[in-house]
Length: 418
Ligand SMILES: Cc1ncc(COP(=O)(O)O)c(C=O)c1O
Image 1 (cartoon, rainbow, N blue to C red):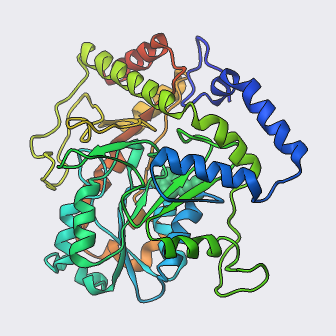
Image 2: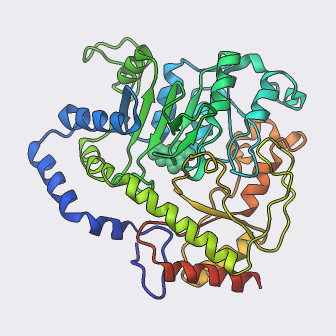
């Protein structure tokens, strides 16, 4: 990755992060290499214990990736053909892919335009049998065996309401917290909860670009119920316990000791890095506002409203912090604005040497591999997600990003919108 200079502003600068803790990382990895213990063992046990403490959970189990964490949660629930799992259409592919890989049917319910997260009101309507539009797809509320909200871009979906839904309908809840380690939300009783710690399962990714990133793939699954936790531990080792005796068919999904070593070093810095990202987000908000580039979100985008996205303004809509008002915390894995002529703006930024990315340009229900689910044949079921896929644009954000470079990003967008 190119280091930042006057010409280039990368979307993320992992080199700068490495340089800031290089000696610690190098000493720790050298120790691991000399130990010869590369699979499981003390390093994994130590990391699992450290991260369980950080998250405030009983059971935190390392695995090979965030995608596998989702798969393992669904496998532990024995989800398979004939079952349905509700999730968001506006996420990384793994969220829907894990469901489909087990032969179950993903049910994509629309997002809220404010925070891009799965709309609990829409989920409730579907489970109450009030949303008859899905009948054309042949999926029914009784088939639903799990719900997977995703905490997109580092901001938690409304987990308190999802927990209430999970309880009312006795459907297990899986938090896809791949992008949200350390994000917080306040419950109505004032309790502050952390992403991926309240539901039956929490799934995390340590993909290098994540706020807590490994030097390759890695993942983690938190589990509330001790028996299900034990099942996940067995499933990640091919379903064997004791070794070579298989009670179930699992997968090979261990977290590497080398990755756990790196993550163990980085974990100490995670909160300060995320706080730093938060500060950078506030700087962007100020700069966009001072430059007169901010459009107001439509009034119908209130928390409880799931009206279709109708925003068609000329400026940008800043990321909405739905969790902040009552003490929650967005960790800004991504700083994502909305802008109308998104593709042209993205191209203009790239031409100016400014990194940017579109997460995600095509919704899951519109992917070719899911065409047999039938979403194309019925009225648009997820208009807010489709609108977000056309307007979302993620800008450079990382602790080492300089204010001068942030000014350049905003100025360039101003020029492109003029
Ligand atoms: C929302 C979401 N879910 C799941 C995953 C899968 O994680 P991994 O890449 O570690 O398999 C990702 C990773 O990008 C993600 O962003």
